[in-house]
Structures are given as C-alpha cells and as structure tokens.
Length: 455
Image (cartoon, rainbow, N blue to C red; front, side, top):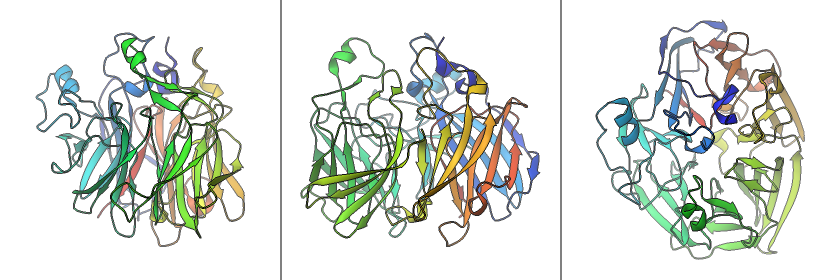
C-alpha cells in the first residue's frame, strides 16, 4: 500500500460543515478571522501503488473564529475542471491555464489572500484558483489577465509596500520569472532570469534589496516524462547548485549575482534580510532529495550568510533536529527577525516524508512545534505526544511586537480520531494551549496555510 494513503496522510472522503464547535480553554477574542490550510486529498485513486502525494487534488480546511467563538469548520475540494466533472457539477468560469490551455489542476499546496481575494496556489504551470469566504471555488484566477505564464506555491508579501512577489518556473522554460503583483492584484512587472536545465524552485526568499533564488540540482527530465513518471524531476549531479541575488530595483533581469554552493535541496525558506553588503537567509536544507519518491537525507535548520562581493556562502547549523515547514511572523518578512517556527516529527526526516517501504504506526509520530530564538540561540519545543500528528504552525499576529500573537496548528487527537485546532501563546510557547477547538473530523497531514484576519 502507499504510505501517503494511510495513517495520518489518509485522505478524507467527504466535505463537512460544522457550526459552533466545542472548545477546551478560551479562544482569544482578538483572533477574528479564518485559519485556512491546503493539502493534497485525492478524490479518486486509480492506482494506489503509483499514486504520488504531491499530485492529489487540493482540499482546503478552514476554521472561522469570531468574538471568542469557533463559528464554523469546513473542508472543500478545490473545483478544477476535472474535479467538477467527477463531482457532477458545472465547471467554474475562467481560463484553466496560462501556459497551456489544457493545463488545469486543483491547486493543492498553499492558500493566501491578496487584494481581497483568497487564492489556492500550486507551482509549475497551473493557475491559482480563487475561493469565496466559505471556501467555495470561484474559478481559475490570472490576476485580471496580467499574469505572464505560470505562478508559484510560495509567494512573499512585502509588509511595507504591499507588493506580492513570486518566483515561477515551468518545465519548458529556459529561465525562471520574478513576478511582482501590486496591492490591487495586478502583475506590474515580470523579470526573466536565465537558468539551465529547468530546475525545480519550490520556494525563494525576499529582502529589502534582493530576490533570493536557490538553483538546486533537482531538474526536469523529458526522459522521465516519456517513461511515464508522475513527477519528472530527478537529482542531477551535473547541475551546479547556486544562490542568486536578483536586485529588486531592476526589472530587466540584469545585475544578478550568482554564488556557487554545495549540492543540496531547499524546499522551504524561513526568512531573509540584508545585513550590510551581505544577505542572511534562514532555511531548511537537505543534503539530497528524490522528489519522485519523496525521500531525502535528514534535513536541518541552517543560516546562510551570502557575501556577493566575496562570492561565498557561509553556513551555520541552527538546529540539527529533523524539521520542516519553517514560518515567521510575516510582518517581519524580508526584514530582520528574532523568532522562527517549524514542525518536528520524532526521528522523521520531514513532516511530509515517511519511509518508502511502508507507513509507520501512529505511535511512531512524536510530534512537536518548535520555536527558535535567534538572538539567544535557544529553542523551545511544544510536544503533542505520540500519535498526535501536527502540521505547519501558522503565526497569527495580534500586536506590534514580533512575539505578540499566537501559533495555530491542526493537531490530530488519537483519542478522538479527529483533529483539534490548537492555539499556543507565542510568549508562553511551552505552556498549556490557550485553547483547543475540537473538530468533528480528521485533518490529514498536508502542506501550507494562512491566518486571514478580518479586515
């Protein structure tokens, strides 16, 4: 059997709506908004053995908080053309692909809000899908016809000027694109940066001066396409790994400074900022990755200091415990931060990575969220216990200070066989949860999400 179809990864079969959920503890009344999370939840599985986790149709899980109450929980599939056909529903209006008219996918990786629209995201070609406030699918979204090509799963919002940044790739391009979207939802600039071998760039980083590209040796293979591989990317020893600094004040792709690094794979960055003439970049680093089987050597949290003048990248291990899904208070995105958060699962090498020879039993998942204090070089760990699988922790800011807020995460309760939304105080991270909101169903381990406060 496929490990991504069992245990904490097993997809749910139904869409559920529940109101006025029970709560242990007290929901902070200042938390008014929605916590949304996206992840693969295959609707139909023709070949369980060959199924690849990254290709499951996206399902959004959402919880609405208002005035100290958990008003509702919903889970909804993203209605791509194929999903609506299989559900026997009418297709949503709008284009289904900007690179290829036939390209359409139920975006399964992230969910954000920009310019008043809620968008489900995926990378590599398909368009985002717009959702309404109750997680219904509006249709594919191309930023009012201004998007030039593919989009990304990981955007970066500049908290000062309100611009949304994306680094996009497509397997048939000889470049990647830096796309800037203004506060109205219009793509105002697209910069093409030449790169060889069509590498997978799942994430990037942003500083006040630079867009930080991570060009790594996981590259597209037409041979794998012809062989019928579902994810045609391979570890390419001949591809030089490097970091690129793209000046934000230029829109022509010029002035890019590349610095070679040792081969590695970076799925997610935590944050980056300028420090003098250098760039500080915090990220999770894998020595090697096979995306076809979702297997990797253990990942560690590192800090890179990129010196473009010397052409060097200094590396320092911040924490060698296996962890993934790093997050930061997004009010500090592209600026200096003190704190960062990540998810830890026992001795697993990534939140989303069981061994390929079969699933681990539930009791093997010793889950935790971890808070890093970069100024003091210490970490605090909030453990949830055996079988209590936890995904990404999302920071919800409620004040001006970096630590003024809460960390929200969906946590599986093995005693109930369902999920809780756990609210932790960022200032008392190892203390008892401020609240546990008891959902009526499981929330499978998935990918990324956002706290969308009421405007």
